[in-house]
Image 1: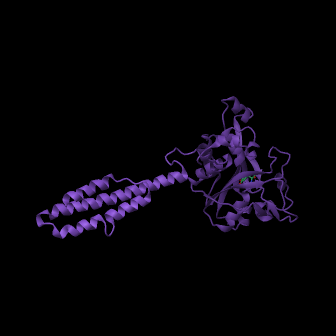
Image 2: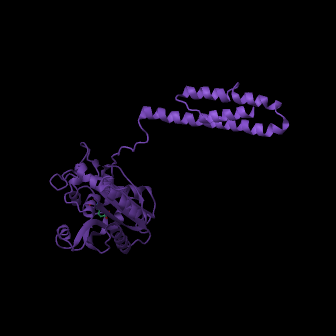
Image 3: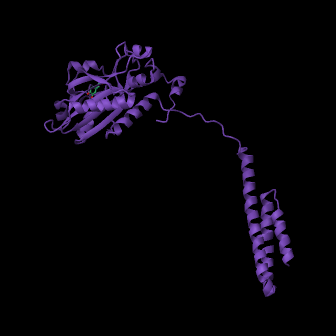
Length: 338
Ligand code: DAH
């Protein structure tokens, strides 16, 4: 009997199947209710005691071999079937064309990352704005001549509804809805009716920054900007030129010292070594008041910059229109994970 079982084991070991039906027949033959295994187990009673151990072990071995055979054959046949449906699965994959973020989004994300390191959060506001948030609250009342600095698209005939001309509108919304300390940056798209200028596409992107707390000073502003230019451009030499914005007092334009090492430096900086990168200033007390913050208790600074312009500088792109034409040959050069 023992010999017979051993024979069954070697038969099972050598069994091959071409179809799932053959595997099933094999399973029934060995492991089925009336299969070999149960037949052998039934013999167990008759086996003399001194041989029981050997017998039991051999039958169990058969059970194991048969079960493993069934599993292995089933898996092999399933893979074969899949291959006939899907083709050869072991072939190397086809390359998939990966997209990349637009350089403007990349630079925006870089700026966000740099300011988030020093505790600024990100806030956003609507692109369709009302007069209050875009102008009046920012110390630009109706008929104020400074409104002419930003030629505005109005929506339909309602002079109260417009496409925001700058992201400074978001600082108003943020101050209205939050209490100091405030540290926020607001990136977004802005619109100006400047068909004659180089920005013939009428929209561009800005990041607005706002910091309001007790005892915030101009020195804090300068230090923050220095940190920023160092982190983004690797350059921390900056200068602040007195300027005018209705929503800040005092106001300044920020230039970063780019250097005059290469011919491109000469071209970019028009031979001066300096590049203008943003506007800034101490938030005008009127603006704080308009937004429900007590200017006697709090002070703060704000700054605003054009992302498109920064992207040009950072990547030495010669024409701003390239940023909105979406020519794939141009965009391909900015593959990045940011
Ligand atoms: N809103 C200004 C513009 O669009 C940029 C700006 C300048 C924003 C100075 C500021 C600032 O917050 O303080 O030209």
